Length: 304
Image (cartoon, rainbow, N blue to C red; front, top):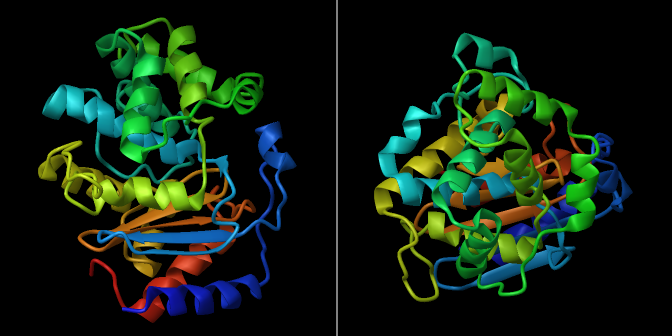
């Protein structure tokens, strides 16, 4: 498969497609990003790399980081984790409170905001220094020893994250948050502030294309079963109330973030990251979704 030729063709075609997305304004720092940025990078399990556009520019990965926090919490707790979280698509916005009332404070899945907040609570309960140990885990996973939280982005979110504050306190009222909500939210906002490039993200996510093992040294980060289940959750829940659309049009497990990034995984083959900051009404990158749909159409490689 000549990934390079396909990526270059689809990138040029997508770049000529009218970008109907809008910049997010609910996190002020994200609204300051150049809306014309567009990058793609693919990393195969044998180490082949293909990149184009702004694929080396770092951006705020936002909810893509929820895959990393789930990975670490799942590694620590094993199947016990599902007593605190469900594994069903939400069908609602990423910051919705609606289903928490019906489900007695159990988030529908780990990728909606409420689910990621519960994951943060789990990590705080199980780690001595959660922020530092989580960062070390991702540094190891990504081979980026200098990776760090962005104070600027985290502060911007903390100053405007009223719905996340409401979510955390609402879950606390049901007893599914064990720690101080202020501490949990502080960790959550830092987690979402991580900045990486498409190249770094595609490389890092290859562990989910490789049965839970790093491609550089075959070190097992999680078990093959856990890797399978995280991929399943990305397929069914990785794009909030547009997850079905992504599975239908793209046909790969993936995860998006409101920073405009999307990562998708083709098990046993590759991980690909796309970044374009203008978002569609569901909070997913408009051009990123279009690119990945065309990419899997041209390559004829999906999990189906």
